[in-house]
Image (tube, rainbow, N blue to C red; front, top):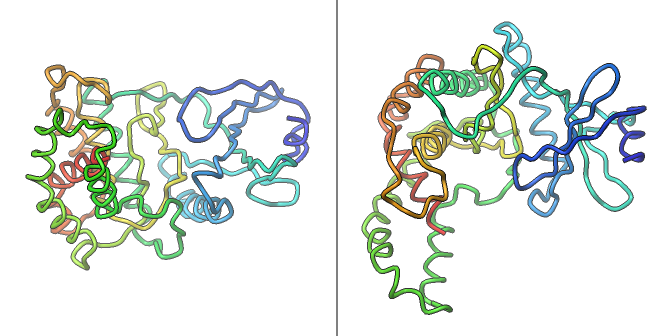
Length: 299
C-alpha cells in the first residue's frame, strides 16, 4: 500500500477491507484526521479507466452545486499528487480514492415503505439533477450493457448448442421466454427510438447503492462506474426489479417469491415527486420493470 499512499499524499492510514460488490476491491482508509474510500478498479471489466473516471468527474461536479443546497452528497474524487483521477501502480493495477461519506449506511434490501420512498426520491433527484447535462459527453463504460438483442443472440446460441443436454429439463422456461421475446423486442425498439429521451443514467440502481443518514433519509447515490447515456426507464425498472422481490435475488424456489406492491407504490411516489418525465416515459414505467427483469435474467 505504500506506493498507493504516496500517490494520493496519504501519510499513514489504517486499512480495512469493505465487503461490498463483486467487481472492484474496496477499502476504508482511516487516518488521524479523516477517512477515505479506496478502490482497486477491475480493468478487465472496465477497459477504459480514464474514460470511466472522466465520466464520474463530469457528473459529480455537475451535481455537487445542486445537491449541496439540499444537504445531499456526491462521491468526491481525491486526485493524485500529479492531479490525476486515478493511479496505476507498478503491477499494472488501477486505484482511486474518494472522500468517505461519513455517518451513512446502506441496505441490502428495501426494508419498509419509508426507505422505498426515500430511495425513489433520491433516484428522481439524480435524474432531474442531470436533466441539463449533455449525456453525449459520457463514454460507454460497458459496451452492450443494455443490448437486448445481443443477449438474445447469446441465449439462442447456447440453446442451439445445448452442450450439457439440459433443454428437456427447462422446456417450461424456454416456452416462457419465447412467449414474451417479441413483446420485449418491441419495447427495446421504443427505448432506442426518439420517443424516449436520452439521459444520463446510473444503470445499477439496486438499493445498496443508496446511502442513508441516521434518520433514514436518503442522502447519496453511489457507485458511478456504469454512468452512461441511456433511458430513465432502465434505471427505474432495475430498481424495481431488485427492490420489489420479498425474497433473495437468487431464490430458486418460486413459491418463496412475492412482490411487495406497497414498496412499489412508495418508491414510485418518491421518484415521481422529484423528476419531470415525458408522457411516453411515465406511460412505460411498468413495462420497464418487465423489460429489465426479462433482459437481465435472459442469460
